[in-house]
Image 1: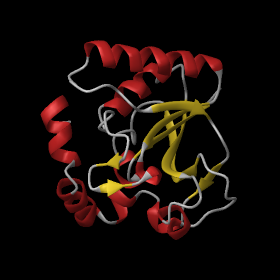
Image 2: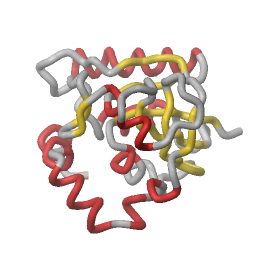
Image 3: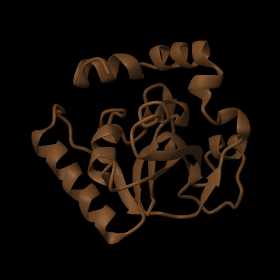
Image 4: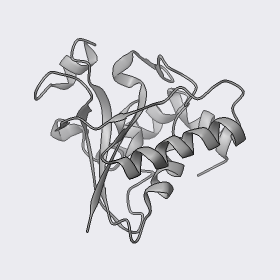
Length: 174
């Protein structure tokens, strides 16, 4: 039976490709979650008045791709020490979070965060929030699979934002 995992890792464009085409990953949807506004638009979320964050919701088969493996991959895409956003994208709408869907996910997320804090490569504390999942709203069509539909712009953005060099510095080429 498939499950859902929801992660906010800054710009959702950069959070799709690492998970895409992994075995057991059924779908990845870019969207908004964590706030109070129903059916927000990209412009509303970026205005910082909705409380939402850009996020991805992954439907996966836990018998093929364990939640712990999703967490490991998530941590390697973000700067978990930055509470003010991600790379050049600033504000709460770009801040990191793990939205858990059940207590098993919460426990796994807390453990992985603790392990990263103790054994990871970062000198500063891990500040990524672990919070209950809230309603998830699918982003506009042009945001879906952006790395496939706009590959040149996506690569320039990932490099220009500083995300690519950060990932390479801490985790090596992926």
